[in-house]
Image (cartoon, rainbow, N blue to C red; front, side, top):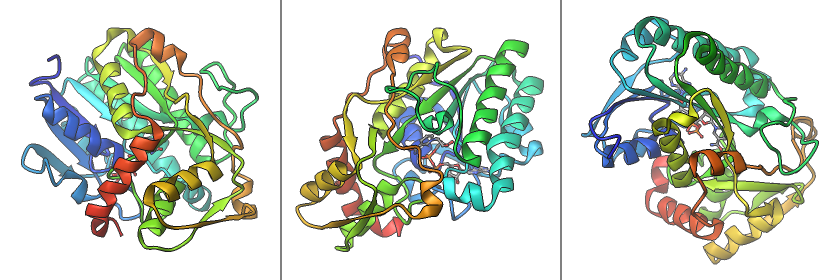
Length: 325
Ligand SMILES: NC(=O)c1ccc[n+]([C@@H]2O[C@H](COP(=O)([O-])OP(=O)(O)OC[C@H]3O[C@@H](n4cnc5c(N)ncnc54)[C@H](O)[C@@H]3O)[C@@H](O)[C@H]2O)c1
């Protein structure tokens, strides 16, 4: 296999997607190092790594520190760059922290690579949030970028630096614009990572959960499919210098999603509420993605249907929930 014995660095490696990626890379024989700051408000959680703790090196450090990054990027073949501040609301309350992590630190990671390891492949975790409220659906990569929050603006700059460093310095980067991702190891303590997290928590605690609006359409990817996308982007040379949307053809309204979760859990209930005004201002309305580019160029497609993915997620948190509350 192409990744056996490859030296791989995952920033944000104790987080939701990073830890799922680490598990897969370990199973493929890669030599995996993780960087994570484990800031409590973010999705990093040591329990995410319990199954592979002996097989990875975990470096508790902050990607904002250019001195540690300089050493950490040396000698690696691939950098999966997932460290990020993910909460849209937090980015409005504390815009400078979002700027530091999602923009400035991204530039310093790329500078560390330029000076110390310019041939490493770099896959950046970007987001569909950068499109803002869609002008058309499904949203393709050609859609204008018009973010509705500070997080979206900073993620655009993080993504743009990656593409620029490919064009100017030849560092082989690629950006994946992720849609709503869910699955084992996600943050369920609150809605900082995704509203689905807090819905799952409430369901498992036997409490009703709140659906805001309810009619908004969304697409969702199960985390294993997102991990597949990171891996194909890292091994296929056609990915270099490109941006790809991820997405799903299973499009669902939030109220239908809530209904599906309650059915799968066999008990529970939810209430539909008006959007709180503060949230309404940064809501993007309906979104689903056109991901035909990555289908054609890298032959990636999501494989997990929503029902199965949600069932597996609920099963995971029934067993491991105590580590996530
Ligand atoms: N989960 C989604 O639905 C989704 C959607 C779009 C984009 N993304 C992007 O994917 C990436 C991973 O997201 P996730 O859902 O796994 O979230 P997550 O919060 O679980 O993972 C991010 C990780 O980065 C770490 N981190 C944050 N700031 C850091 C810093 N300064 N130094 C070192 N580590 C730091 C956190 O501790 C956390 O473990 C993020 O960049 C996010 O913007 C996620």
